[in-house]
Length: 214
Image: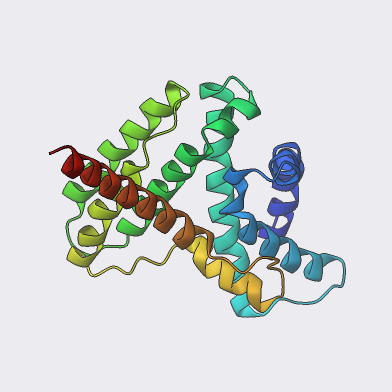
């Protein structure tokens, strides 16, 4: 069985969850929808029109499938175990689910470091533990956690000479090249930046209020 048959079987197995997330315009699927769209585009070219994929496209398909498989498995595990198959309850915690997926991405990237990254990995895993505890309580993590995540990862990646280049940002560009993007937005950058700016504004307003009371 080749990777394209693997994908077809995988999709059949998870189609209900995928369709539910996509049809409900779930915030959880938004960050990985471009990966799914690119895979569908390449798979349909391969099967429906019997066009051979280029070497680059084969690599894109394999890396995209591995990424989508891992993230959908995480989402499915959360849905089954943490949220007792209640997709609406999970959607209410979409912000926290997304942060967990971001942390998983950064953990994967850190594995590419050529020097000792064990201390930094432990810091990421501890941060991940806080997110998981919030999800177990069906709570959304505070927006300041996104700032904390930024403060943890930026110096970490500089230490190891790694570039922060999230897979979904790469696939956003690939999806654009295939004219598969409806809205011009980089979900990863926009989402993280939005949370940081919201927190900074909130902090600024709080400082202003304190100053006024003096």
